[in-house]
Image 1 (spheres, rainbow, N blue to C red):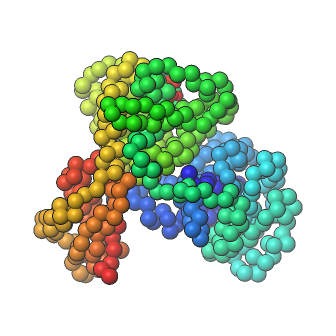
Image 2 (tube, rainbow, N blue to C red):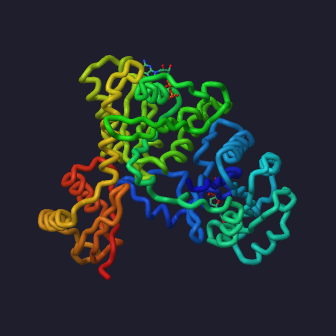
Image 3 (spheres, rainbow, N blue to C red):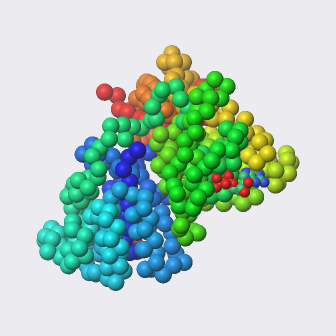
Length: 442
Ligand code: GDP
Ligand code: GDP
């Protein structure tokens, strides 16, 4: 997987400004379901060919209720445990604070590679000033003067971050899991929703799960199983819950576990607890599966505790449709992992979605679809001219990605993108994420 780089620091030093600056270009490439945007605190960044996932811990590890010091400490702890390199942002105009020093001490002891970003140095002489600045005294070594807002010093900051990453491993930034005929299924969800129970139900045997012992491992556990002639690799991300972390933080670890596992998965099975829908966190995980372009099955587990009532299921489904509307393509299944009910259905659907994930559309059919779309929906006017779509081609699978050549690639309205996405879904019966690229005619 791609390396993880965390941004830590006190509130207001400019973490989110820096995050947006560094990932801006890539975020623009990641598409939401057209018309739906979400707040993201992680995204891929790219520096001279090295791609890594950047996490703004300020948004990722919320600590509104805590004292400032505790909050920053928790973010730093998270960064040290889960990430490869840390960007420690300080406000060079305000100077060093007690909280900065506390975090610096913690980071220094951790031995993790750290780059100090002395931010808000808004002019070139300011940048120079910082080189002799007081932040060297933090004892973390590398100090980079930057202005996140004015886009200064980004190059050398990125240089020193990338220099601290472990050497690149071949395939670490692959956009899709290997196409070796095996179906990789990530079981994700908040703690205690029933992930391990579901995996055990699928395997139909109780394995000895080493992570039952507190703190032995937080690594996801892979299980290989042959199911109706398909080879599946199930990855259970449950191990993380035995961590000796503060309660509210544990939730964040289920996101980071998913972040780490999804890259090498074809399908995410997102479990929710029917008795305890926690829409915010469930939505974060669903959104992550979409960002990573993975097929998604939404599983509402512990349905035995609600009673098998069709009307209740419909009501639940309607609520989900609103709360998780950006993943409206994902099938929803009501299960009881404990009693084995609908467990087989989950696997059947995951297998089917894994196939759709690697779907390749026949070109003649795509061309017919383009003709149909153009004939049936009046092209919108973009900058005073009618939008013209010339060609369509599938340029990638896993997830299916389509390029449309047109006369105004920048200006295609969300509504029209949505229309095209829906038509592609309908025509090929796809319930996986679909990506659209718009290109100028060469
Ligand atoms: P966070 O709480 O650490 O995420 O900080 P924000 O990114 O929200 O920034 C806090 C404030 O500092 C905002 O008003 C930003 O506009 C401002 N800020 C961020 N970077 C710079 C910078 O390089 N120069 C100046 N002058 N202000 C900045
Ligand atoms: P994980 O943290 O997501 O792996 O959750 P576990 O699989 O460890 O399950 C947490 C608790 O929920 C355990 O006590 C399970 O027995 C229980 N549980 C899991 N699935 C179900 C279910 O479908 N119905 C009921 N009633 N309990 C369940």
